[in-house]
Length: 300
Image (cartoon, rainbow, N blue to C red; front, side, top):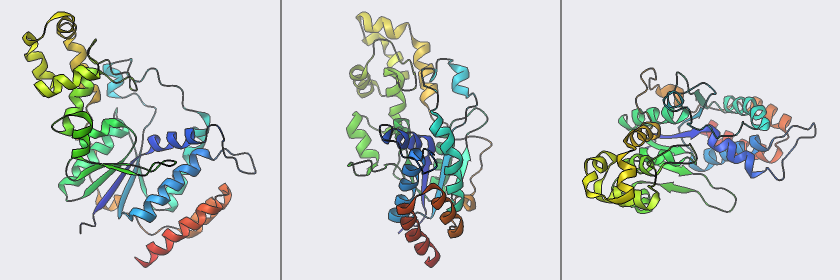
């Protein structure tokens, strides 16, 4: 069995889910600290550690720095609301918790996003024989799926975890290979990130074009096959189509990012530090779960 299992976690994807899970009934400590984003993220983390027992893991955070995508298209993610104050407050606590569990974390930088850091690590790790699980709710990661890279959708409320691989994505979107997700989003656009896509080409037409032509390049090369308004819309918006493709494509070869196996390895946690921060945050039930993992790790 391959014990080189690497879990890559899209930090803000899980933190935002944590925040909104409790938005109607936020959780506070006796001192008034809103721990909603912290407690769910911590529960999710310990649950992964106890149930999946990964040997390698890293958490990747986005930053507020301008990205190359924003420079290419100033409307990229422009409609996103300001980060809630509770999340700003939660981040330092989450990073403290990660340090006590001896789990590495990275920041996106130099114009790249967390997606690009994750994509780069995943592809480098795959070449070194790792089996990679990307944990995120962001569907852009579907494009990275291979035989050895899968998407791990964490359990939420009554929904069990899901593992998405090549067949799941092919069946869901009617494509030949997960890489075609890039072309699908390029044609139909993606409102969640303000990706424009091709005007007048919705999901139905995009899937039809992918099935027939395979890529957005082949669609433009076969423009003579089309007619009417949709032909005119596509023909007149070639720039938007290729811009969209550049925006949705996850970078998997960030030049400054080197793969360092030792940084991804999960070392034995610091129980004294875990206990201190958990008691500070009044995470009494989670402390028992954390101790279960600690006992497993010291016996490893």
